[in-house]
Image (cartoon, rainbow, N blue to C red; front, side, top):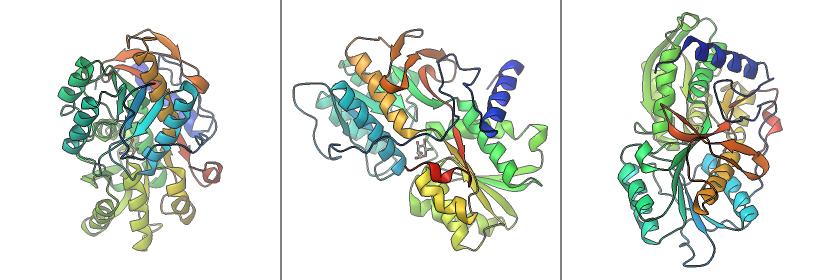
Amino acid sequence: MKRSLFVLLTALIALSMLLSACGAPATEAPAPAPAATEPPAAAPAATEAPAATEPPAAAGPLTFVLVPKNLGNPYFDTANNGAQEAAKELGVTVLYQGSANADATEQIQLLNSLIAQKVSGLAVSANDSDALVPTGKEAIAAGIPVVSWDSAIGKDGRVLHINQAVLHDIGAIEIKMALDLAPDGGDIAILSATSTAPNQNAWIEVMKEELKKPEYSKLNLVEVVYGDDDDTKSYNEAQALFTKYPNLKVIIAPTTVGIAASARAVTDAGLIGKVAVTGLGTPNQMREYVKNGAAPEFALWNPGDLGYLSIYVLEALATGKIKGEPGEKFTAGKLGEYTIQEDADLGVNILLGLPFIWDKTNIDDSNW
Ligand code: RAM
């Protein structure tokens, strides 16, 4: 990825502000990014969230579907809580439907059935960027607005992508945390989600670029492995890393499933203090591992806000308030005003804000 020195410097400044807990909007982001000065609050729990298997309403008000990579992941459940909050405010119905596995083929089958049911709009966290493009195109041709959120569908298969944080910041913050945890350097490994996941793959590319910087020269990336956002597979992959790399110092897991499984594996193997885990996690899943020292610090944005924003965008598209063109502005309830932007990596997109770091000083401040 080509970035100017200016952009690198501004990203570094944004990062250092984050790390000193006095964040400000990322300077490279044209859209307003809320400052990450305090831990993201929980979105209220959904009281009337429809069951995942419930079919969309046949007629009447707008029915949107929030599609995660897979079901059974607290990260996506939290996003759904935010989506249900937006649904109530907007007077629309939001169904939460996903496949059992984080698998593109299963996800495409689900999307085809939702297109056939003529839902009013789709918000998808993609299991594969390219594979979902024809399905997204088909939906758009059928008059169903498609946005991706969390993990992007290729540019032609969605109107726009709702981006959780600046891509570069997410990768860079993870390498920064790895050095915090292994200041003398050593072997590090990445335990990711699926090998096709567009979001994790983009962050891993950034991490590899970051590792070329002189300040990270002591960190030695030995392998990238995939736990498929499946708890058992992620746990087993973490264990295999301990065996294969006896001097492993850090596992970076850019997935909420992988980081929790890795921290549990470190704890079970009695390796706390020898191998540290970091990456992207949810506070409730990571609290015990922050406290026992297996995962002293990790980062994330607020998935509840991401789900909330996705539904506001979908409603604005479905009702013609916006067309999904760069420069258009709209207001997303409690989150305030956003401007649609366009960049080389993500095409047309909307930026939620900044990632946030949790450690033992603030892990009890968030309950989601
Ligand atoms: C998992 C999923 C999701 C990702 C988070 C960080 O829950 O892979 O796509 O954004 O981790």
